[in-house]
Image 1 (cartoon, helix red, strand yellow):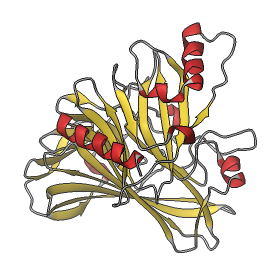
Image 2: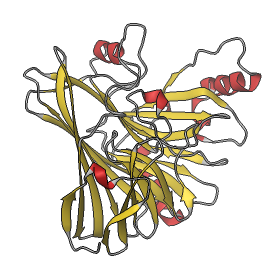
Image 3: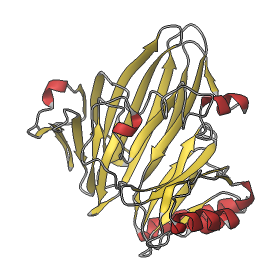
Length: 361
């Protein structure tokens, strides 16, 4: 249907195997469908491209295309799966990670990989169409509650916005503590672009402040894999150049502290050989740790130029030891917002120039 500025709730019954237009506002359209797996998908188009959101499962951005280019990592999954298990539904462009824990469980941990948020069931979802000083936009708002007796009770409210003709996705998250005791909380925005051969990574980190996690490689690891990790360990900044045909297995993980501008924002960019790029922008005051993640192999090809986080992704016990947990008081909420997406050559150049200025601060 054609509508003016409006807000309405999405009924799960709208999502069927046959894709259906549910709303239009100028060039912005929203269509609902259901994957063969049963997962509901919401396709939002804006004239420059489209994103596919899982409105009732973690509000993941499952896929995104802008200006004819797919931004999303390559994975083993051709469609999302109904599950709470992180590794059984793997391959989205954006995954909200965290909750009572985040990261890979260490030897002292018993929590699931990346906590409760990645595939959190969300029982309510709304579409908001509107217009502000930057033009028409559409928001997806979802809400879900996670409760475990003698442990925690919180409500997560993720939100996404795309604007008419833009190639940027605006994301935010609020997590409200419904329990009568403080909630120890962790969060990481797992933003997974597809790496581009010959690209260069730009960030506002000081090289000496980068902490590299050395992978545990068994004796069967190919020489090329060992050589890559050895070369990065010897020269950490060298990882910023993405070489063609270089395997990165099982993964590259490093953590950085980065500078912010006078407006409180910082940026990370994958600059392609043609000058265009992919970017992430966020506030270090909200998410103080910049995690970089990359894996390149036959089954996954993914790059997180930066995964903004409240702590390194080393599990709950490590965060406790290092004083990196966020405490949410009863009735209070954690809030964060960030932006990511595709950039043309001119925008990429402006971001890289801004990053260079931040490095001088």
